[in-house]
Image 1 (tube, rainbow, N blue to C red):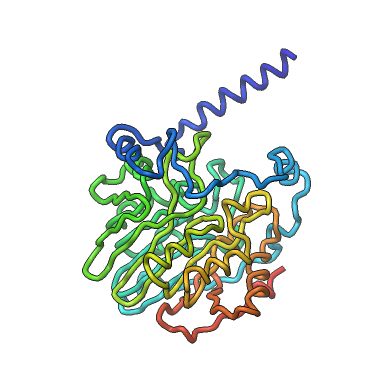
Image 2: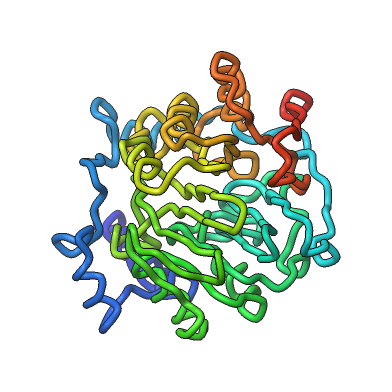
Length: 365
């Protein structure tokens, strides 16, 4: 018993000091915290979802989930082959081209109507605060911060490690004009040395005028936040990006709920919906959409085209690495919603609704 208690105490001490590293960020305080407390979405000391959102689906337990993760791992979670990719030269890309370039998972670069946008960049090759514990798939890590031009607007949807990567963000600091993020997330950025004047930190349904005929509305998502043992002390969100010519839904992470339909009713149909489709599990489907729910969300948003992301780079769930794209493509045969499924690095022409994509995952083991 003494030995067991000693080991537990030692682990507790190690964890205590480990999570004090800079990469874990800083909890909101002072004026920022007071502003957060004024939000209608902040109750009982934390942010809340619009609907009741259990961490685990009824009938599932944390012990069962952990047992399956450690002792019943799907051998197909990680591809045997390298993920197909191309290297588009973003530094020489003409600003006249309206394109999207995906880096895998939920990280992508957009250039539209003369502005350069970066969303949830994770380019360090790891989606965990512990080095080497959640490495990117082979072939998915060819882009680095050095490959990026100056960014007009950096969008962060929430503070999880697979969306807000400390190493990537530090390297980006000198390249970013403005950062748009949900309430509380600015605390991490300021702690990491970002100038307060470039951080635009807003609540759900807040509107942001970025430039002439270029604006953003922060919209709800059904998820959670946290970089250590404290959950929901910062907000999570999606965005409606309105450019002079396109309306784009930047989805972030979200379980399916009525908010998708409400967003379309309030802000109008979207030309492109970028929705998470991957790293899901029936055990936690309240906070991550399943493939059939992604298609339903696209219909709710009245989307002309859908780009399913959150796959093909990190194994955060126990499904096969190619299941998200394989399943949504099969389910979509009846609906025939135009799906954007590029290989990593392939330019997506944002204003070309006739562009088609090869189902590349079929050729990868």
